[in-house]
Length: 288
Image (tube, rainbow, N blue to C red; front, side):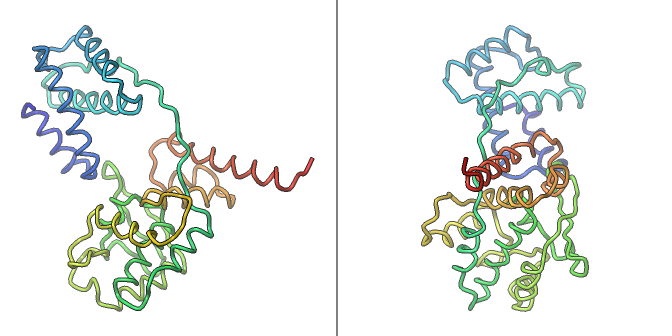
C-alpha cells in the first residue's frame, strides 16, 4: 500500500480513535483495493469512473456478500475523502458510488432469564469472578461497545451520580449510566484491589489492560456450560440492553443517545425486535 494509505490508517487510530478491529477491516479492504489497482496498472491518484466500474465488476465476480462489498466501497470512499482533505486530489469520485442494499438482520439478544442464568453462573468467591460479574453487569447496564468497555478508566466513573464518561467511535464523548446491581459489584471489585495499580477499570488475568479477545474469551468461558439458544458475544449484551429498554417503554431517541449512534437509522434495527415482542404478546393474549 502507498504511504498515504498507511498514514490514513494511523489517522483512524490516533485522530478518530477507531477500534483495532475496525482499523484491521479498513486495512484488509484497502489491501484488496490496491491489489486490484496493481494488477490492472491503475494509478490510485488518477482513477476514473471506468476504473471504478471495473473494480465494482471485480467485486461482483468474487461473489462477495453485499455487506462485504458495501464495506469495501465505504473503506475506499473514506480513504479518498482523506486524500481530498490532505490535498492529494481535488474531488472524491467514490462519493458518486452507492453501496449495495444490505438486508438487515435482526440482532441476537438474550431474554431476561437467559441473562440471569449467565450472571448466576459466575463464581463470586474470587476477585476474578467478581471482575467477570462486573464486566457482564456493565455491558448490560450501559450498552457499551466492547472497545468502549475495555477503555473505561477509573477517573471516568462518577460514583455519586452512577455515570461513566465514554469515548466512543470518532472520539465522540457521551455519558452512560449504571444501576444498583452494577454499583454493588463495582464496589466489590474496587475493594478487592484487583485493579489497584492501573488507571483502567478492567484488567485481564495478567493484570494488564483487557483486550477485546480477553473479553470474548471470558464471556465464552462463562456461557460454555449453559444450554442457551442464543450465541453470546459482547455485542449480544449490547443488543440485549437496547432491546430490553425498548420492550420496557424507552423511546428510540433515548436508546440512540445511550448507544452512541450518530444516526437514528442504525438504532432503528431494534424497533423490529421490539415489534416482534409486541406481536408475540398480542398472539399470546388475544386468542381470536
